[in-house]
Length: 380
Image (tube, rainbow, N blue to C red; front, side):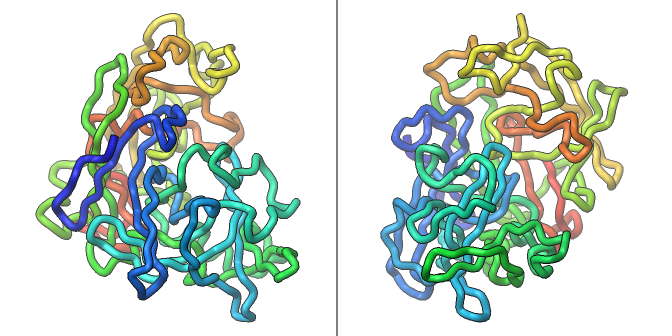
């Protein structure tokens, strides 16, 4: 099913459905984007890009690319590639430059990443479950619309010998030899919305409420800008400023322990704590082992709060994932343990796509002015 048509130039239709090629993607939020050779009308449209407020940047399958896009290179002319970590694996591929069109807005000459090994093989130093093709991604790409201007920022500018540089970027030779590199911020994979001429301070995701039994598909709307047009005002939304790491706090249960957390439309469930800490049984069946399987529907509450003192109480439910109907692909009550918890370096709560149903969720970009102050923040 196609996303609903939109008329405002700063909007794009969204759709939660079974994914490209009816792959059976559960709680995947998708949009389309058009990529063009910079400065030309030679373009290609990618549908079913996963809309992700937990990352930054446009990443599309190299195998589906029909355009010849210019390489992004070092000052010495060496082409760049990136090893990008995600919770469920590591994306590898070369960097290219494209004009990216979303609705009626254009991010000109934007550094993007192609996902694949057609150009350069994934080096051994790029570790984690390899995500390099449709089979491992289950989408045509990722539209990262998080809170940062680039996907790495100042840390990746540091020398590769510095402990600050996480080693995401690689400079590659024609012989397919790639080594970690320091990369200026203007050459890093960047936030497409921040590069718009207008409406460039944030993004709003709007999804309707759905029934507890789920839905086969759900249409939605993505609006660019916060307080820049008549269609993107904050209204009475609660604004949660983020800490230096880009996190808010979640108190769970109410009056209980405070955990770091974030809002992530690219996660297909509410991922929090672990089975023992949450007191919820984890599924044992292989196909559902990433989720919770309580004996009956579990009704919970938590408080989201921020460094600016604002807070909001969130009621949510967790159902037995193994009992959800196979005919639906959108659920507001799918949850599981947070991967990596209980490490102190791992947030306790990932408020994934179920959080977004029935809400207008604002993501304000860092260093960009808005009616509620300079980003970054989340609001809803």
